[in-house]
Image (cartoon, rainbow, N blue to C red; front, side, top):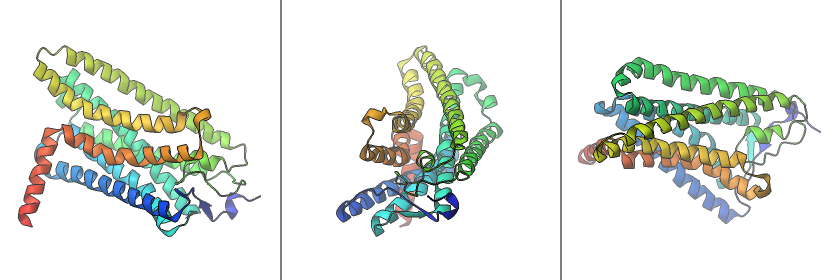
Amino acid sequence: MSNSSSISHFLLLALADTRQLQLLHFCLLLGISLAALLGNGLIISAVACGHHLHTPMFFFLLNLALSDLGSICTTVPKAMHNSLWDTTTISYTGCAAQLFFFMFFFSAEYFLLTIMCYDRYVSICKPLHYGTLLGSRACAHMAAAAWASGFLYSLLHTANTFSLPLCHGNALGQFFCEIPHILKLSCSKSYLRELGLLVFTICLAFCCFAFIVFSYVQIFRAVLRIPSEQGQHKAFSTCLPHLAVVSLFISTASFTYLKPPSISSPSLDLALSVLYSTVPPALNPLIYSLSNQELKGTLRKMMTVSFQKC
C-alpha cells in the first residue's frame, strides 16, 4: 500500500506494445500536432493582421484557436516523447500540471463555443441590436469570463483530485493524466467530493448544451423565414462551421465518457481518448477556413505576401 505522499511519478498507458507501432504513433501524433499548430496559427495571424476581421465572430474564433493550441500542446508532446523514447512515466507535478492545463483549455473551449453560439444567435435573430449586445467591451468581458471560468474550474478539480490519498499504485489507464483514472487510485471515501464536483460539471455542461440547442432552434426558424435563397445561404454559411465544430467537440467527448460499459475495452478507450483530445484542435481550423470566404481571402493574401518577400 502506498499513499500520494510517497508517489513521485505515474505510469501512463502506452500507445503501443511494439517498437514499430510506437514509432508509427509518434509520426501520426507529430502530423496531427503540426496540422493543429499550422491551422490555428494561421487563424490567429489572419485575425490579428486582418483589420476587416476585427469583428466579434472572428475575435471569438481567435480565442477558440488559442484554446485549441493550448489543449493539443498539453497532451500530445508528452505522448510523443513516451512513444519515441519507449517510456511511460510522468512526474507527480507533471501529471498535476497536465491535468490542470488540459481541464483549463478544454473547459474554456466549451464556454467559448457557447458564447460563439450566442454571437450567431444575436447576429441572425436580433441583427439590429448586434452592435449594442456585442460591442468590443462586451466581447472582451465574455471572453475573459470564459477563460476565468475555465481557470477556476480546472484549479478546483486539480486541487481536489490531488488532495486525495492514493493507495492503489501509480498506473493510470490513460495516455495522459485524467481525473477518472486518478480517482481509481484513491482509497479514501473523500473521492465522493470529487464525484460531487463532476456531477456539478455535468449539470453545467448540460445547461450550456441546452442553451446551444435552444439558440440554434431559434436561428433555424429565423433563417427559414428569410425570403431569398441567397440570404438563407449566407446565414447558414456563418452558422454551419460553428455547428460542425460544436458537434465534433461534444460528440467525441460525450461518446468517450458516456459510452455503454458493455462496449468498453482498453484499446477502444485509448482510441477514443486520442480522438477527442487531438482531432478537434486539428480539424477546427479546417472547418472554419473552408467555409468562410473572408478568412480564406485573408489567408490567401498573407501567403501571397509571404511568397513575394521570399
